[in-house]
Image (cartoon, rainbow, N blue to C red; front, top):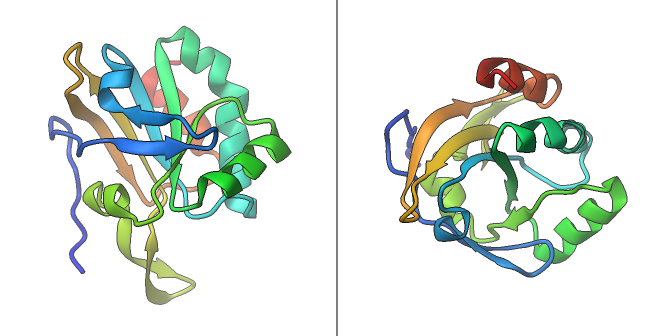
Length: 160
């Protein structure tokens, strides 16, 4: 399994996924926006909860800076809805159950887990510029990010 890695300036693979509320999202829906698409392995696990709550708690500052936040995992929309409810998450959580977009982003593949090589979701964050015509370009691609402290580091890097 090859691990693709996106770099700044690369086109972002097509987005056509359903969120936790059953709404469909494409890049065209976010035309003209700067989007933080963050990838996490599994809803309602400790690290993913920490990260989601950090994004939730930073959402006003990110939105004020013109940044839209979208979460992405292979979880079902139903599980994502439970996650949103449980932790009062206030941004869309996208479902990629067949892991197509995750794979195209380079956020699904081989990774190290407790010293072993396994295949799974690679915790990653992408800052995406979506043009007025709906084409999406990578501004930043961050792979193997830590759940704890990542949002604060990202905010510093983005000046938010």
